[in-house]
Length: 351
Image (tube, rainbow, N blue to C red; front, side, top):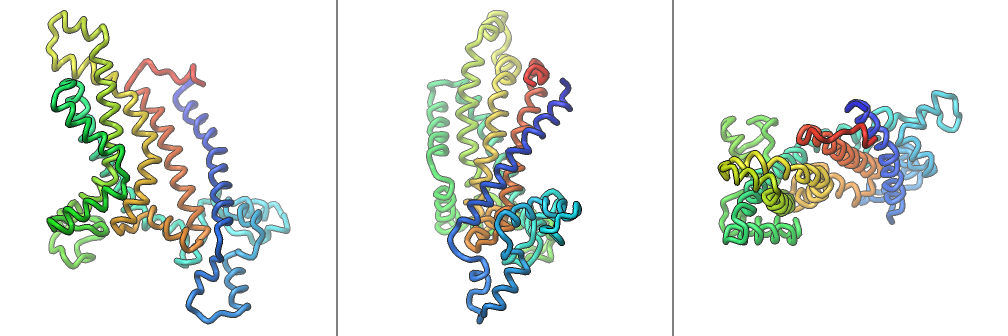
């Protein structure tokens, strides 16, 4: 079976997973105590007519099963087929519409698009930081096994794995933002917004510098766990590769140790790294929620936290479906990446 057919098969497998995510999220969101209309109208003079008008405008007066089908976009399809119960049903997920936020009074798709930039920048920088530090440290630790360098690297990895993300963020804020006062501790400077958007930058160069300065602490906070996980695995896999018979044979032939490390040990050790990086995407998404909250970053994760507090059902469903889809696609891309690292991998037998 070709790679194209394999990808198609995996995408088809992802459909029931995403449907399951949508059902669980919808049930849990609607089971939360409280009333979204009461929260939205909090502090205002309200009467029964106003509450009914708001519920009717956002479809909250419909039964739960009908609201779920409308969110998924099934309602519009049934409306087109002439099913009377779904007349004038709105577009939904199948039509690329994530609904309408009752708190922000704007489409969820537009809301998520605005918030996606900071989250993507944070996650890409965190993974870049994690890989750029973990792989060299893992190789160095394996090459100098049981030496002081190895002990120091393992200690750093143990700290990263066992320390909560939010605690690392708070400690970095206290040390570098409060006591040393060398790095900013709140929100992000987005380079695509331009110089005029920020009062404290005068040029494009200043904008880039401030972008990096504002990104350093959130990047380290989110990337530390990923770095520690990858470093531990890289070290273990490199030690295993260096103890293989073909490595002993290469040494017997007088191949330089640096060549053995680079050509014969490094590449076979990267298959588990690709797996763990793909699977860690879900961990990073969860960590991004906490990191954005600690550093006051207006990303998708913080949007989800705010939506849960406001019982904004459409935003909860929309952001959860996007995060779930990102994770499922990340797993599929991880599987595809195997073929590029190890030509022995065949998808035909697996399917």
